[in-house]
Amino acid sequence: VTGTLDLGIQGMTCANCVGRVERALKKVDGVLDATVNLATERASIRYLPASVSPGQLKAAVVSAGYGVLEAE
Ligand code: 9UX
Image (cartoon, rainbow, N blue to C red; front, side):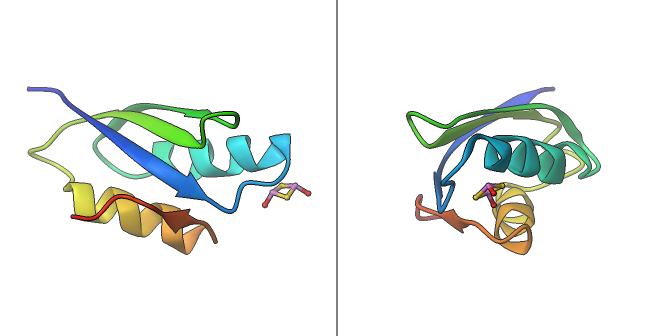
Protein backbone atom coordinates (compact mmCIF):
# COMPACT_ATOMS: atom_id res chain seq x y z
CA VAL A 1 0.00 0.00 0.00
CA THR A 2 1.34 3.40 -0.97
CA GLY A 3 0.40 6.63 0.79
CA THR A 4 0.78 10.20 -0.32
CA LEU A 5 1.43 13.19 1.89
CA ASP A 6 1.54 16.84 0.95
CA LEU A 7 3.35 19.19 3.29
CA GLY A 8 3.85 22.93 3.30
CA ILE A 9 7.55 23.68 3.69
CA GLN A 10 8.80 26.87 5.31
CA GLY A 11 12.21 28.44 4.95
CA MET A 12 13.23 27.48 1.41
CA THR A 13 14.89 30.61 0.07
CA CYS A 14 16.95 29.33 -2.86
CA ALA A 15 16.64 26.60 -5.41
CA ASN A 16 19.19 24.39 -3.68
CA CYS A 17 16.86 24.12 -0.71
CA VAL A 18 14.56 22.01 -2.88
CA GLY A 19 17.28 19.43 -3.31
CA ARG A 20 18.11 19.48 0.38
CA VAL A 21 14.51 18.81 1.39
CA GLU A 22 14.06 16.13 -1.26
CA ARG A 23 17.24 14.34 -0.20
CA ALA A 24 16.27 14.50 3.48
CA LEU A 25 12.93 12.88 2.68
CA LYS A 26 14.20 10.29 0.21
CA LYS A 27 16.76 8.93 2.66
CA VAL A 28 14.01 8.01 5.13
CA ASP A 29 13.17 4.31 5.03
CA GLY A 30 9.77 3.81 3.45
CA VAL A 31 9.88 6.91 1.24
CA LEU A 32 9.42 5.99 -2.43
CA ASP A 33 9.62 9.46 -3.91
CA ALA A 34 9.61 13.07 -2.82
CA THR A 35 9.24 16.12 -4.99
CA VAL A 36 9.43 19.67 -3.70
CA ASN A 37 8.09 22.74 -5.47
CA LEU A 38 9.88 25.95 -4.54
CA ALA A 39 7.18 28.23 -5.96
CA THR A 40 4.32 26.66 -4.07
CA GLU A 41 6.50 25.74 -1.07
CA ARG A 42 5.02 22.28 -0.97
CA ALA A 43 6.43 18.78 -0.80
CA SER A 44 4.65 15.79 -2.31
CA ILE A 45 5.73 12.49 -0.83
CA ARG A 46 4.90 8.91 -1.81
CA TYR A 47 5.62 6.52 1.01
CA LEU A 48 4.83 3.19 2.58
CA PRO A 49 2.57 3.81 5.59
CA ALA A 50 3.60 0.43 7.00
CA SER A 51 7.19 1.66 7.25
CA VAL A 52 7.03 5.35 8.07
CA SER A 53 4.48 7.73 9.59
CA PRO A 54 3.54 11.26 8.52
CA GLY A 55 5.04 12.49 11.79
CA GLN A 56 8.38 10.92 10.91
CA LEU A 57 8.27 12.57 7.49
CA LYS A 58 7.65 15.95 9.08
CA ALA A 59 10.47 15.32 11.55
CA ALA A 60 12.87 14.62 8.68
CA VAL A 61 12.07 18.02 7.16
CA VAL A 62 12.55 19.76 10.50
CA SER A 63 15.85 17.94 11.05
CA ALA A 64 17.03 19.26 7.70
CA GLY A 65 16.44 22.78 9.01
CA TYR A 66 13.08 23.69 7.50
CA GLY A 67 9.63 24.30 8.88
CA VAL A 68 6.50 22.29 8.24
CA LEU A 69 3.24 24.20 7.94
CA GLU A 70 0.63 21.48 8.18
CA ALA A 71 -0.81 20.55 11.52
CA GLU A 72 -1.01 16.88 12.36
MO1 9UX B 1 20.33 28.16 -0.62
MO2 9UX B 1 18.58 26.74 1.12
O1 9UX B 1 22.08 28.84 -0.32
O2 9UX B 1 18.86 25.98 2.83
S1 9UX B 1 20.28 25.92 -0.04
S2 9UX B 1 19.05 29.00 1.04
